[in-house]
Image (tube, rainbow, N blue to C red; front, side, top):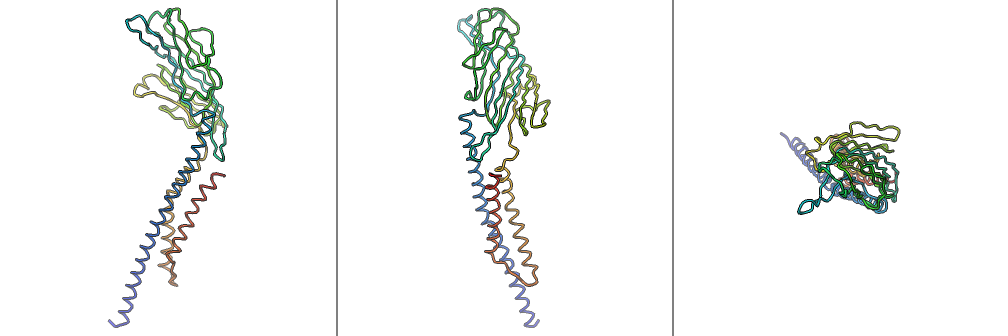
Length: 322
């Protein structure tokens, strides 16, 4: 083997060593670029926090997400040595909720709000015999009473309808009925979502409104649902036996915005490392296969990666306005 062959071998060895060194420099550059990727995740999180602050400000004046509890009927039993509060069983429970939605803006944040007209009907089963002279108290519950537009209306045991200033109504029973019918109606405001507890032996819930992208949530999916022309309608029919294993079973609807730009930007950013890797790999292959032996400086790789990361920053900022 002559001197020329030895020089050629040394040249190949040096070239191979240079390429491996360049490869590890590129890998290191990719790892360094993960730092600004982490910063961008923080930027998206901050923007989401600003949006939540806007939602909270609207909630303080309009009303927060509403959670309607099942109505209850109770009386105080003084027949024993010690008085006790006794509750009648909610037998048939029918709820009809009609919501009118609109968009409220806080800055450039869009917040879906609604006004719900709620009608609750049903019967309580009497297992205590003669209730003559007992003061029965019918009670409702909502998660945010700031949303009430007017006093709720109570009607119990076929007595006249009464408007009350609170969330319970007392009435005297002068008979021993097996079932006590009731009817409650009220209008209330809320935002983003609403849920109803279902605590009866039979439960029939109907929710309808004008929203193009509702999400039906809770412990049960509706048996019937229809979404068309910007309106929706959903019905649930749930027996008691289906709720035995659940604490406070509920059904409801969430008003989703068609596009959540922060969620989409965060999902896009999760693929940033993949796109950076593929781009750097393509340039590195170009270096290896170039007939003219063209070289790309490591700083150029970093500048290329930085330019690609600016895309994700623009994606967040421009999507807020678009």
